[in-house]
Image (cartoon, rainbow, N blue to C red; front, side, top):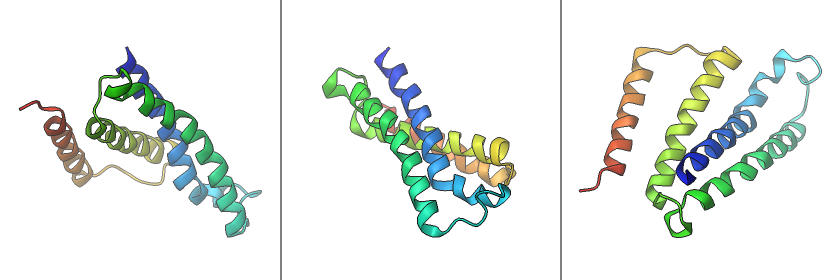
Length: 123
């Protein structure tokens, strides 16, 4: 169950991470935000990233093997990266609607899935 909680918290964390890192690129679509200066954009992104950490830190604490969770550090990082790409893709394609999936993205994601397999494979 700790593994599931960990992954769910990572998903929430990555929603905020994607919004903090890339959401400001969508500000031009909102008239009230279109002319913000760099400092204001940084402050908004930092404020959003705060919530990323609210979910990221407990996810790693709950999921880490030495704290009673099921995952090693390598496994936690691998899950984080896979979740990050999935959340980023969903938000970019369906939320921001600024990008389209192409075959090379799918091949790249397939290779990442293969990397996840090798990280979790016990030899």
